[in-house]
Amino acid sequence: MEIELKLFMRFKDYLPEGGQKGKAKMTLPSGTTFEKLLHTIGMPVPEDKIIVINGISHKQGAAANGIELKDGDTVAIFPPIAGG
Image (cartoon, rainbow, N blue to C red):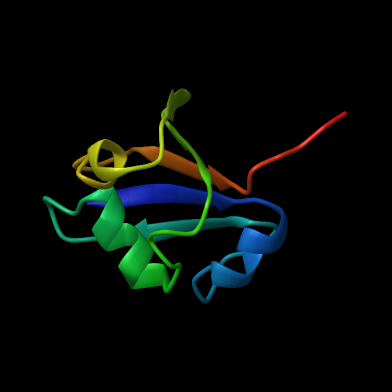
């Protein structure tokens, strides 16, 4: 299956080879979970992050880690943002 991965700010450091401007197409085995995606790109699972899959925000944690990705999904990962 193929997904589009979008990484923002400091997370761009985890972009797979061939990705540009914070975006990359990735081919993954069917049944890949969000947690497995993080392992694949080398991003620590417990690191704070905002997760958006197909435009829907997900809370970080076990529930998000277990989300099974599907062909054509768009996964965006942002670092936490603080404002004042």
